[in-house]
Structure formats: structure tokens, C-alpha cells
Amino acid sequence: MIEPDKLHTFITYIQLEKNYSELTIREYENDIYQFIQFLEIEGVKNLNAVEYVHTRLYVTNLYEKQLARTTISRKISAIRSFYKFLHREYNIRDDAFQSLYLPKKETKLPHFFYEEEMEKLFEANKASDPLSVRNIAILELLYATGIRVSELISIELRHVDSSYGVVRIMGKGRKERYVPVGDFALSAVEDYVLNSRPKLMKHTSHTFLFVNNRGEHLTAEGVRYILNGMMEKASMHSTIYPHMLRHTFATHLLNNGADLRSVQELLGHVHLSSTQVYTHVTKEHLRKTYMNAHPRA
Image (cartoon, rainbow, N blue to C red; front, side, top):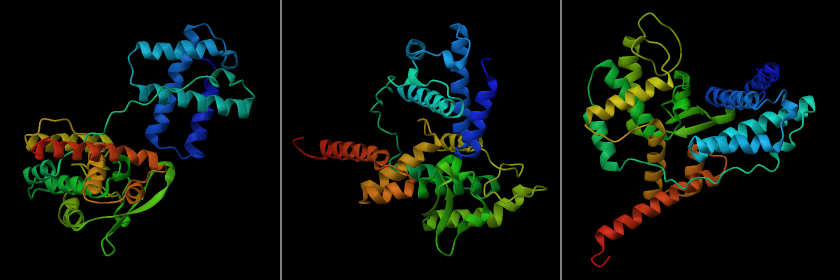
């Protein structure tokens, strides 16, 4: 592998100094490693020998694999960041990337559940066994707050403040925010903490809020598995993923009169443009309502 020590140093930098999430670090490492593999195939001997023709060829290669534009953009951004770091720390040329443009983002609207679908999901999964109580608490909290799955699994018991009705969230880039939680979600979480979590903990001991059936810290993969199981129980055949509940949270708030700036703050978006995609969803919702309801539509 071409100069593995430099990749290792960069990964350490984004982990310790930039405080990137584990998922982002893993993606960056994979993206850069794949680029280095491509360079080796092309006969490039070191990182300083990369020319614009190599970067263009690599991007063409990515398009030929029919990857999503968002994936290609992420890969280019990861490699650009790597080379900026190399230029600063080792004086390695990064001009091969200066004329490289990111592909335009696809204008896909986020998928979300309608309110009736959420009700069906909650109703079908009501039960008193420890795992069902935990699952409802997870669903309620994701829908009530719009937090990311990485944020959900990072919540500790001390982060939930029932008296004020808020939960402390550690977001992207280690940015902290407090998110309000409604009565339904608070009640579900309290029921889980008092009656289910102690039964699931068995002989383990830690402070994370959500645990698996062995009492261990619940993972992101575990949350996805739980949500898929809840969908099956509700006989809902559409796909679910944790971010879909985040989309649902934002869409329902805007549909019911919340302003965009408030939703931005609740979601923890740095830029308003990240939140504005939901205005397209609400406009589409209004258009469908009009087309279905107006006698001469």
C-alpha cells in the first residue's frame, strides 16, 4: 500500500482533533483506501505523484460503477480533505483536486410516514414484555425528537431530564444540544427505565439508556433490526430506516405550523439549506391534498 503511515496519521487527526463520528471516520478511511488502491493499479508510486488526469479517471470509474451522486460526492470530499491535510503537514501537492467539481446533488425528496401510519406502528407494537416496552420507547423517542440513530444510542441515563422534559444530545462534531421531549415519549422512556431495563441488564453494568436483550449497549445495527421487526408486526411492507423517522418528525412539525428555523435547531442542522428539503415535502403534501380535495383539480 502507498504510504500507509500518512493515511493512519490523517485518520488519527480527524478522530482526535476534528472529533468526527465513528461512522464518518470509517467511511473516510474506506474511501481513501479505495482511492489508494486505484492509484496502485494505475502505477502511481507515491501520493505526491497524483495528477489531475488520475482524479478525473477515478471519478469516471465511480460513475461507471453506477454509484449514487451523494456517494461520489462523499468520496471526493474525503480524498480532498486527505490531500489538504497532506499539503499542510507534508507539503504534498493538492492541485490535482482544485479543478475537480462535486456532482450535483440528486433532488430526491426524503421518505416519511403519514400520521396514520405512525399510529398503526405504535398500536401494533404495544405489549408489556421487557423488549416490547424498550422498542416502544425507542420508537417514541426517535419520532418525538428527530434525533439520529447515532445520537440515540449515545444517550445515557443522566442525559434524560424528566422534570424539564428534555434530553441532552451529542450531535455531529461533538456538538451538544438539548431537545424537548413530549409526554408520550417521556412516559415510554420512564416505563422502560423503571420496569424493563433492570430485567434486561442481568449481570451487566453501564449507563447507556438503551440495551439489547443481553443488557449490552445497543448498537445502530440493533436499532435497525428492532425497527424492521416492528414494521413486520404492523404488517407494513414498506422499508424503514432510522433516518426515516427523523424525516417524519421534521415533516409533521412543518405540516402542523412549525417554522423552519425552529425545526433546524431541533434537528441540529448547521445550515438552513439542510432543513429546507422538508419544505419541498410539505409543498408536495399540500399539492396532493389539493388534487384530492378540490372538485375541479
